[in-house]
Length: 425
Image (cartoon, rainbow, N blue to C red; front, side, top):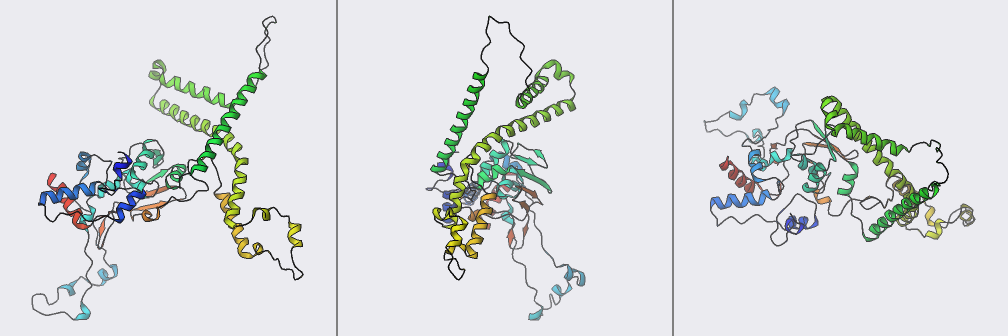
C-alpha cells in the first residue's frame, strides 16, 4: 500500500501508525453517518471503518477464521465483602414494595464495554504486540522487523508476523531497530555527514588494498621461486574458510545424506555464530575511524546545551583564577552550581548518548515527533524498554468501564462490526 493511500486526507482512514498525517486524521475523526441506511449498510460501513485500523495487513478471510463469538470479560469483586456476606441484602424486600434505606444503596458498577473486544484476537499477533509495546512506529514496520529476523520469541528467532502469542511469552526486538523506529530521522546535514564518513571509509579500505598489493610484487621469472616464509593467516580469512566448509557440508548431497538431524542443526548454529563474528569484526574498524571525527561534534553539542561561548571553553584554569575578584567570587556566571549541574548532566548525556554519523537515525538519539499521542502501554503487556523486551501477560479482557483493546471507535461502531462477523460465522 502506498503512503499516499494509507494516510489519505480527503477520505481519512485511521491506521495503527505514528505518522503525522494519521495523527491529523485522528484529530478530525467523526462517527460514520449511518442514520439513513439499512441495517446491512450500517454493519458493512462499521466493518470497513474499523478494519482499516484493526489488522489492515491481515486478509479478510484470515480474520474471519480468527473471529470468536466469545468475548472475554471479568467483574472485579471485593474479597473482604465476599468473605463476610453472601449478598442477601441485595434481595431484601424484593417483591414487597419496600424501598431500601438510602444508606444501604449499593453503588452500581459502570457498564462493561463488551463490544470493544471484537478485535481482541488480533492483539495476540506478534506484529500487533510489537507495535503496542512501542518497539515500532506502525504495524507494518513491526511486520518488517519480524520478517527480517530482528525479533525473538522465548529466545528463538521468529519470522512469522502472525504468530499467536500465549500468556507468558516473552518477545525481544533488536535495540538498534527500536532506536531507528522510535528515534528522530536525520536531517540533510546529518545525512551528508554520514555519506562523507562512508566515502572516507571506502577510500581508506581501497588504500589499504593498494598498499598490500604494492608490498607484494610479482616474482622474477629468471630466478627460481623461493618458498616464502609462512605468514600468520588473517583471522577473518580463517572464519570465512570455516564458513565455506560448513556450507559445503550442508549443501553437498553425499555429505548431507550421511549427516544426522542433530549434526545439521549444530552446523547451522555454527554458521550463524561465524556470521555474527564476521559482522562484528567489520564494524570495529569503522567505529575506530569515526571516533575522532565525532569528538568535535560532541564538543559542539555540549556548547549548545550549556549556551556557552566556544572561546570561553578554551580558557585555562589559571586564567579563570585570575578573573576572580578580591572577595574570592567569580564574576563569570558559568561557574554557578546550577551551571555545574548542567555541565555534569551534559557530559553524562554525551557519554551515554554519543554522536555517531554512521547510525541510520539522528544522534544524539531523541524521540521522534508526534510520538507522545501514541505513548501508552496496554495492561496485558509488561514492557522493559531498556532491553527492548516485553512479556505477553494474558489475553485482553473487558472490565466495568474499560475495554483493554485500544480502539478509537465507540461501542456502537464495534457492535455493528461484531454483528457483521457474527452473521458470517
